[in-house]
Amino acid sequence: MDKKHIYSEKEFPPIVTEIIKKTSNESSFWELIKFAILAIIIVVPIRAYVAQPFFVSGSSMVPTFENGQYLIVDEISYRFREPKRDEVIVFKYPKDTTKFFIKRIIGLPNETLTINGNKVTIKNTEFPNGFTLDEPFVKNESSNELTITLKNDEYFVMGDNRIASSDSRVWGTLPKNLIIGRTLVRLLPVSTASILPGSFNPAS
Image (cartoon, rainbow, N blue to C red; front, top):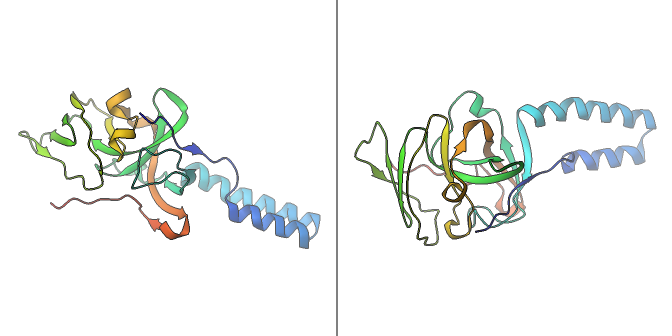
């Protein structure tokens, strides 16, 4: 299993860094100070409460996300609604909350999941007899056999690269309070730039 994970980038976004460099070369020291203060006032609250950049590290979400891709994660939506099935999220790894993982939500609170290879069956109040997930984003075969019932505020997450992902099949369910947010924008590389990357809306 690939246990590589997303690390949070702690530096200013690249565009802010470049503007600071340019300002330092062309303007006075005090203008640089004023700009730096303004950048901090604007950037810090946004990064703390609204959105945050992350780099993908590892192959657990291939082919949906590749190693080294640069993402912006929406940290505000889940304050107003619950996470949804099939959304790609970034979260703190339950076994070590200093690390960040990226996976897809498969099971929701209070559901029962049965996994047989790549076939995932969900039972809940709406479908007491169960239904099978449509997962076209999974491109390889796995051989897992597992049945689990989730508790309140527990989620079951898996990587799209099923044979190379350390996820809920390995370390258990994901508590809601460890979710950082959903993937909002893929910025780099430019050729793969997109809004809501990895999103999937199965036919009803």
